Amino acid sequence: MKRLWIVALSTLLYAETIDCTKVFEERKSELLKEVEKIDEARQSFEALQAATNALFEKQKASLKAKEAELAKTKEAIEEKERRIASMLDENKKLLELVEAKKSEKVDETYIKMKDGAAAAIIEKLPPHEGASILFGLPAKKISQIFAKMNPQTASEITQRLKKGPPFVEDNQTKE
Image (cartoon, rainbow, N blue to C red; front, side):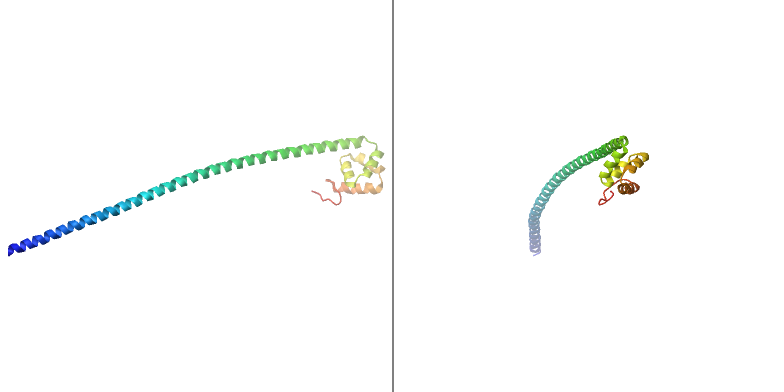
């Protein structure tokens, strides 16, 4: 009987050992399947991450190229603006030079002209133009021309001369 108990007990222990090994083997295969799923998911994630990074780098490079192009265009526009400003300054200087020469020529003409002829011409001009012409003449010449002019016209031109340049029409404002 003692032996029977030993045999029964050892059978039971051996059967439980077999069951544990069997359970461990089943569990091991389940775990391996889970590890494979996790590994596949990790590989998919890494592939997605690599594709995302590649797309990001491509967009980043495209953005840098566009920024460089914009900077180049901006520089070209600024250069054109500088050239235009330079040309405007040059044109202003030339215009001032032309205006000065024109005024100088007109002044020379009226200085050389007889007082009566100059007075007759200036009387026919609008007062602002007459004042503009007389402004460049010496005071002695102005007084000689005024002496030959109609007193009313001479008075109007004198008022304009007192105000000073720029001489504009009554309906215009000084700039």
